[in-house]
Image (cartoon, rainbow, N blue to C red; front, top):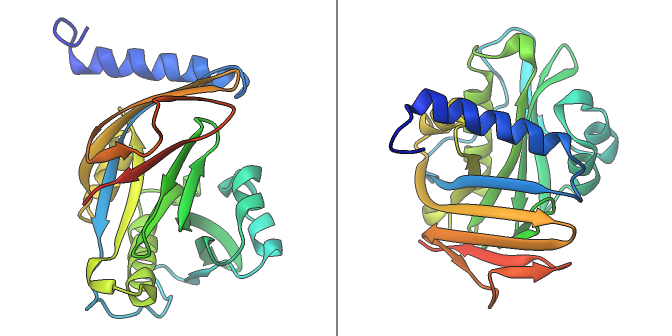
Length: 229
C-alpha cells in the first residue's frame, strides 16, 4: 500500500480503520501506531502571567478535583479521575469563567491504559498526554498560548531546567497535531506500534524509544518504556 497508493488514500484508509477500532469496546481491541516527539524547554523563558491575547481569557492550572470534574467535554472521565495536582496536572484556558481549552501533563510516569504501556519519566521530563480546544475557538491561537504557559511553568518547576523536556505521542496521520506541536519545536524521536486485545498487550518500538520490559508483550500487565536522549 505504501508504494502503490498516494498518501491521501493511505491516510483515508488509516482513519477509517481507526474509527472502526474506536467503535469497539476498549477491552476488545485497541491499535495505535504513533510517533514520540520531544519539545525542549528553555530556562530563560519568562514565567507567564496567565493572560492571553483573547478578551476575558486567562490560563492557569486546575487546582481541585471539582475543577477537573467540571471540564465537561474537554476531558474524558479517565483523565478527570487521574488528576492529583502533583504528578498528574491540567492547565486550562478560561473564558468568562468557563474552560475552553485544556492540556494534561504527567510527571514521574505515564500509563496509557488502553494500550497497556507505561512510560518511565526522569525528574526533568513530563508527558503531554491529552489536549482539547473547544470547537468554536479552534484555529485562533489558544492552544499555542496554552503550550507556552505549560512550557514556561515546567521549565521553572524542573530541578534541572536546562535539560527539561516535554514528551508526547502523536498518532500516525494526525497532521493537525504534528503541525501544532511543530510550531513549538517538537521533533520526532521514535515510533511505537501498539496493540491491546483481551488483556494482552504487544508493542514494537523504534528510534530512541526503548523497551524496559524484557518481552514485547504482557498479559494483564503494562509494558514499560522509556525515551532515550
